[in-house]
View: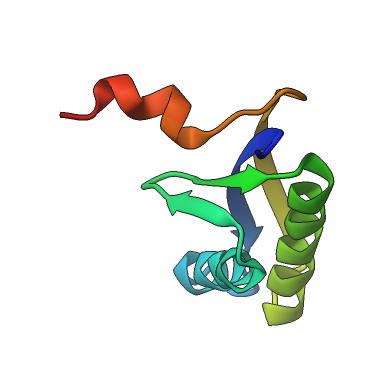
Length: 97
């Protein structure tokens, strides 16, 4: 079972003030390519897995957005660490019909 949930919001500075959406899309692609369980939400994306792996994905996301053309990136991160196991489903099941 996973030991962490990491929610991340990437806020890139774009070179010419253009839309951040393509940059955010690139960051989400990194998550999708990683294969970890994740959920894309309106204002952030939550990943489920081992803390060290998730933090490495955060690093990869920042590097990918930089390579895409952003010279400055803010990453707002929330971490739930539960050495005995945590999951998105456990936290949200009571809200599902």
